[in-house]
Image 1 (cartoon, rainbow, N blue to C red):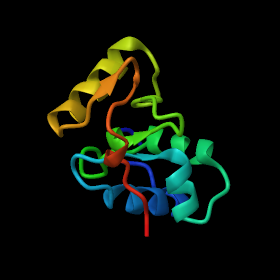
Image 2 (cartoon, rainbow, N blue to C red):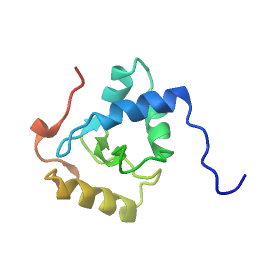
Image 3 (cartoon, one colour):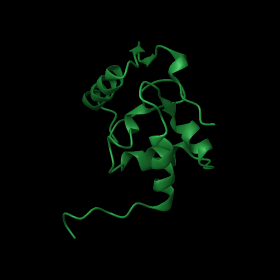
Length: 111
């Protein structure tokens, strides 16, 4: 049916729930989310976030790669999408220099 939202899988629900825990002004990694929900695949987490129908309530822009680079945004890695992700994070005080997170203290770890 056109115009209706698709069902969210149980796995996606776990990813979105974990992502909602990331405080404003902090980031975490796809791998850290995977670990927090008991999943061995950071790529699966990235795929779930790519389909996130709840943004910005589920702040997928706060998820970056383990090497502390931006990763993707909305399933894209083009400069236009990464500029948008960078802008959203900058509004929260999260800065990147030479493509990497400037302040490691901004990394949120799940407890």
